Length: 160
Image 1 (spheres, helix red, strand yellow):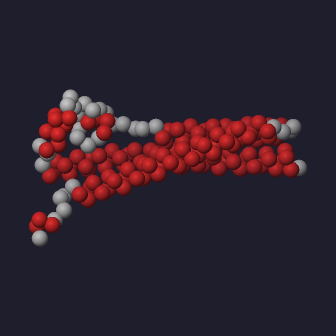
Image 2 (cartoon, rainbow, N blue to C red):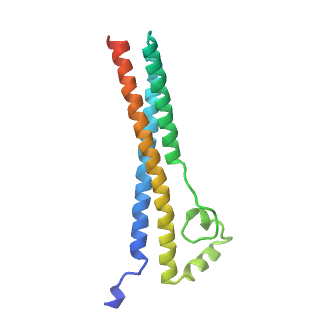
Image 3 (cartoon, helix red, strand yellow):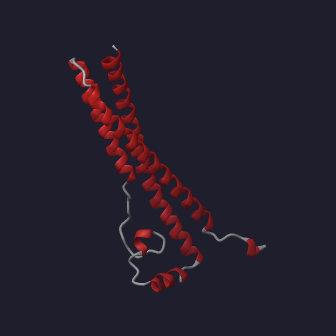
């Protein structure tokens, strides 16, 4: 029975894998928002109105859409921890001089050390996820406001 027991760090690794999936989802949402928002901004010049209210709506809509893109870009940009020699963080692995040096560092770790490294990575990933999802929420909020204003402009300029 004892040989079938999973290593202590296995659960922590599964959590990390889930966090990586959430990071990919946040990045995909941000990329989609960037693409759609650029299309909306491209259509915005066709909606210049004649009244000051229409100009103000045009301006605020454009600002909201640009702010949405900024928050989406902040979501996509990678956030890296302070570089050091570590065996798990991809950015840190490059600090090893050779593949052999990296392998020696990996195989010298005890099961508990591996678990601690996964826990440390998960802790860092949770902070990254918090920032990414905070930015994507702001991006969506400004996108919706910009879209609503642009739809209002479309109705007043093109349909009325």
